[in-house]
Length: 479
Image (cartoon, rainbow, N blue to C red):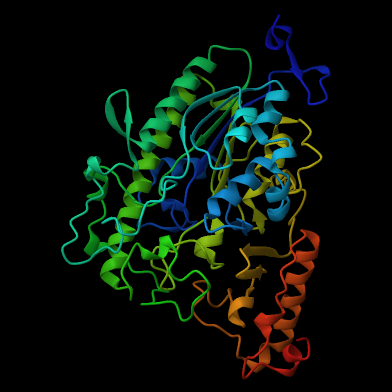
């Protein structure tokens, strides 16, 4: 006799407990989708009707962040934190010994399924889900070379086209046909929902798109929505970043020529928006299938991204930095037990998805989970879970952000940056040499160090605050 037939849910400790049927969970996770990419929420330039609908029927966290990465492929660390619920360095050290999101929900009686991008090793995939559909690693995991014509565009004589399906990457072979990655993963997700809808057992679907990761390929009709000459250049456009942050020539940064031009930024943002609008169409198919099967009121939808992306902001193209365009992500909850049309501006981490889903389902999260549930914010029982947000990138950068200010430390470069986010949300005016900011700089530096102690980050940030002419005594006294 099945658990569902007995009307029971198996709890993590193995005990059968009477329960009504718990809601299904659909987790949709994007690759490289920055926070300013949802039409109705914050960017009227982009067409995202299905995400717009999700915003209107759910609760959106407008200030959700990724905590960082120990490797250039920021997605690896972000996804490790997602599936473990652990802080950055603990997720790195303890992934193989931790209870993972899909694994835990399976132990709670859920039928679990994964399709799309997996970037945390075969063994963790195998123990996470009862069923695994078509999947792949990183879209450029096999060493896609910057010598490929998809890079350094636009440039003279480069005729590479994102709609050329012979170019591979997002154009994948399936059953003898070439299919876009977003369509391949969506087909598997829709098929799973159709099968799962006939069962009494609740399901957990983890759908991880490769879009909008480069090379940003899609169909001509989506590219046609964004004529290059009509695409806006962001207010913080620069021909080049003012200094080397430590990974100046990393693969991501070679997508466009140096120095950056407005023409290049328009081209890349046009293709970025196009692949996102295509993905939005595919997400619509998933939401329509949930509706068509009569599961709308019994399903929790979670939408987020592993991290953001520069795409021409600050003279950068990639995500190996601590600016908001790269560390801030969309985060939406909708469906069963979630208020509609709500926006919460508290500082949160997207890695709280694990504990929040458990809270919404009424099942305990594993003791190893560190990121707190966001349900108290959603229920109005709390105004905040963090007063500051910490970020890290390899041994090269550390960051702390409040609602109003951000301090970024670059120990390898012996420098730091300070931004007043209230007056300067695009982070264009570095105040690090402003004598009047000395007390704030010292306070934020101490906050970085406090965070480091709490999550076992051993990097010495002292060199970032030494050797700077014009810094004040309050700063130099500490170095």
